[in-house]
Image (cartoon, rainbow over all chains, first blue to last red; front, side, top):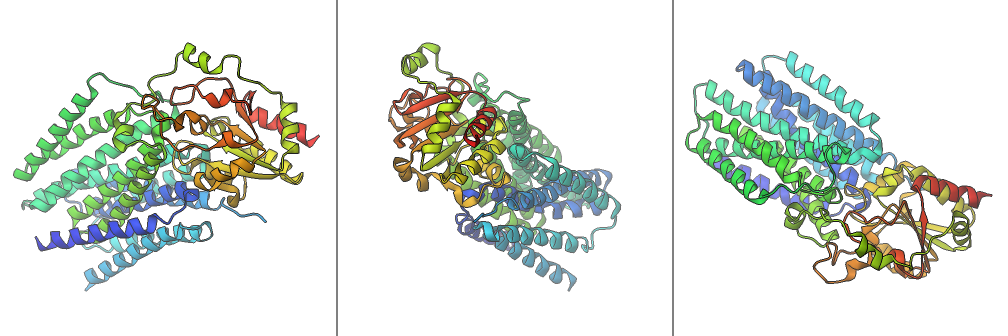
Length: 93
Length: 463
């Protein structure tokens, strides 16, 4: 129960931090914001790695492997495409 | 000891994610911000590999390498006009991964001979539900954006009833697993029902409402990750997931507001299913529409002191952005001031037009938000509307609720001295209603393909 309360506290506080930080992003950068945030949501990769490596049963290992694959596509693709887009925003004199 | 170090490293990753997102508040710092986020992720992955419960590394490496390769190929090769589809797929994959991990976690706990407690079962049902809805909803959104599934809303009879029944079944399955933590079949059944729900929720939403849907799915993918954090007792997952959940939620509400519609109306209203009849359009247009030639518009543009270009999804479809860039450079070399007016929901995702114009090397300080540029239309000599329709439709100013775009904030292009609308025909935009702007006194229609017309205009002016 104590662990749950701590987890909930972190969850709620992080949402507030998210609101504060993200309301400052201008519409100009909304597409990179979306793809960049999207890449961060691939953090679930961390859970996938443990599931794939713990080798509890064939089923959990297969589930973990698929999850690692999907989350890796999300993470690597997300950060790279954001990088590619942001490199294009230039100011000319 | 090592566990504490791992947790500290996770904390550092979470800080990097927050600082990275903060970097996105300005184009100058954005690139660095994204790199910080990527480094935070790299760190988190490396540290996780030290976890003592990991005994086999081959499959992990195989998954990381193959997934990383596919992600790299997609990120580097996809055309920027297809960015909405790509983000939809990435979103879906993140959500799908969260759902699978929730399943694997419960499976693993049961195999170890213990029973998962109520926090873990509840969190895993949330992760499975949201993750599965995200994956399958995103796949439908992808299909719609690619044109595999029709962009028009598909209205299934009794769809609200079906959705409510499916949602109730989901609730029942959640209850089953919470009461009987060994009933893993309930968790997998939940994933399957949520998949159907995800498909049915997105199928009735029209293409022009995609900016809202993609933002919402983005939010879901974050919440699914946060729920997975509750399952695994991993604080960093909770933090990162809720940051993304907040980001998606903010974008969702910004997009809904930019259309003056509630989220519920976007999700369930089926807007865009009806198209104006020919007679309705005739009444608006008859005898009042003036069409111009490329030569006439070229003269107007050259004589203007200030030109504002309004890009819409049509510009992306016609791949006209390069031609528009050439036209812009040419006009500027003749001393004409050129700016771009970007409506928040122009295109198929938030900020879509900005990315396309940045790609063709248009300076970002020329890309103006709606609120910033609207007061300046009155001092604008010429507006070129390229592939946009509903976002410049003055009918939005009326309060008649039978008009699907009533109350939507629009770009006030009709205030300008002259407006030229580049469009293939007088066909209605996504809202399915005629546009009185086309029949206004100061408006000329220049019929044709956006790319070809922009090229012809540039040739004519360059002569």
